[in-house]
Length: 72
Image 1 (cartoon, rainbow, N blue to C red):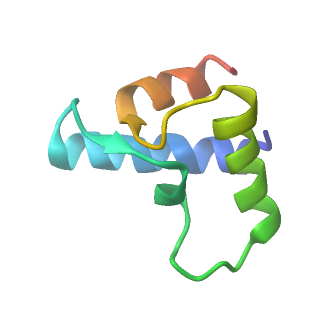
Image 2 (cartoon, rainbow, N blue to C red):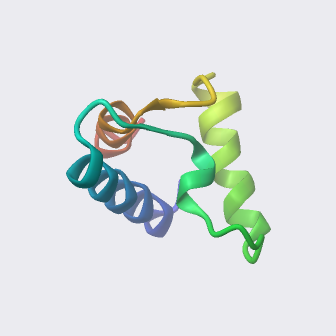
């Protein structure tokens, strides 16, 4: 996964955790606007989320952030 996407995921997760607490859930759609302006990056996130790690539609933001920070 490209570094810019990793940075974005970490940032979004941190924001959501700060606003809603450590139990907040996210989906990979949380990292993108409603307008599909970067389909390549969206597919990269979807592949990492669904295909590579077989995550549920919603996962704890803390878990996702930790996975990305660990380079998984």
